[in-house]
Amino acid sequence: MSLLERLPLTTEHTALENGGIYDQDPILSARDLVVTFGRVIGLDGVSVDLYRGEVLAVIGDNGAGKSTLIKCLTGANTPDSGKIFFEGESVRFNVPQDAREVGIETVYQQLAVIPALDIESNLYLAREERRKGVLGSVFRMLDKRGMRERAALAMKDLGIQTVQNMGQAVETLSGGQRQAVAVARAAAFGSKVIVLDEPSAALGVKESGAVLDLIKRLRDNGLGVILISHNMPHVWEVADRIHIQRLGECAGVVTPQSHDMGEGVAIMTGAKRLEPI
Amino acid sequence: MSTSKNAAAAEFSRRQQSPQQRLQHTLHAHPWLSPLVLLAVTSIIFSIANPRYFALGSQSLLLQQVAVIACLAIGQTLIILTGGIDLSVGAITILSMMVMASLASNNGVTGGVALLIGIALAAAAGLLNGLLVTRLNLPPFIVTLGTLSIFMAIAYLYSGGQSIQNSSLPDVINWTGTAFKIGEFSLTVGVIMVIVLYIIVGFALSQTAWGRHVYAVGDDPEAARLSGVASKRVLVSVYTTAGVIYGFAAWIQIGRAGAASPNQLLDVNLDTITAVVIGGTSLFGGRGGLIGSLLGAIIVGSFALGLSLIGVDQQWRLLAIGALILVAVSIDQWIRKVKT
Image (cartoon, rainbow over all chains, first blue to last red; front, side, top):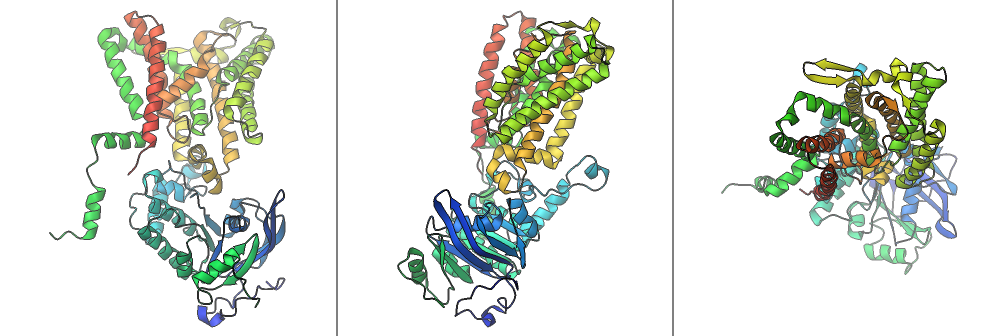
């Protein structure tokens, strides 16, 4: 991180408050990301820092560049210019798999789960484990039983008790259960950063409560969590810091303590400007 | 009453499903069930109409008749599972067959080498389909409609429209027609080869990561890509594998027909799609399996056999198959709406 300057944290945010997580270097940083779609500017020089053990919410109106920013950080999009650093090292993600390999997992808004496949197949999709010995190496046979057991454990670790049968097709699950599968999938593989795109958008009150608990648990386990949401009460409930996108730029970073929901929305819509620190 | 909330929830989850819902769930989990029931019902009807239907001789004839379609249906199933369709099945098979036979008969190439070149050519044709689908992002229907004409034209130009009789072919090429008897039941090498292919590809589909990726790409290509599945590579491998299987089918066809002729196999495009669809594989991709396609091919063959044993005009077969396709697709649509 010595190469690049750290973004100033908001004044209200002292390192003491959060057990010193801001004393350490950020796990994921982006500097001056620019993305254009033809003549349309998606991102106009946006920088962001994410620390271990924090929930960073990204809010913004439609078209403010939230999704574009997230796509750059997760490899779904490549920025035209700008740099991304992971654990202090400069990285370049061309495909989502690149981001995944360093430990950035994404739960997409449109839920990247395959409806026809069962829970275990979805959890292990694209990182299936093979049997030991000749069956695995020559015949490439999957270790279905082992994967099923570990899938059940992963779901249990995250406190997801409602789904019992790992052989159940995902399309037979409720919206909240599907979301739980998607989050479990992201969290289950030793990842360091988890990006959640509108995780509670399609859920009922009780189900979104469970997802928020899940997010807190991920943070308490020392992961960096990025949460994109339109739901302000949810953001103010779980976020440690809130990155506000507006018209392709970062309008500021606030905390739930420094600004209330109304002020946050005012900054997001341009009704209020954040005073420079 | 001492039931806690959880017990009530558990009770709710075990709530009575209507027989219709239960049927829907069962078919959802086992898409090969409906073709199996259909085959059992038609077999019973035909054997009541003519007891000779279940004679071992008739049944072994049935297997030999459906062997080539059943073989081609393996490739067609793989492609339909990915949400595609292959209209060039027949053209690739004919091209491969004509090249195999003509190399072995006039060009002084040994039978084994001719065979390998024929299968490799079919694989290359499949690869070309796969590359066109993935690199140019063209719909599989259009790609294979185009290559259907191209491969057909090459097969005609290369063979001059002439058939090649098995008397001028080496034994290796004719081997698939070799019959042997187990009691009354007569099998050919070709039939056994088809069964072995079903076992190999069935294993790959159900027991390997590749198989899961085939389903994933077919069910939701975007979600599969976001999950890290190398969708394009999976698609190319599927089209190429299908090509290899068509090459084997060409070999089996020479053994079955006793000749290689560019005028055979003209109906196989629709026949294979029929077998796959009746077998419970969804034309929209991601659902179904190989067992169903084998059953589907046998069902189509059993109609031909049964109706000819009863002495009914074969046009009734067409009519019945047409109705079955519509029923199969309707059932698929219904199964897709499954809910907990």
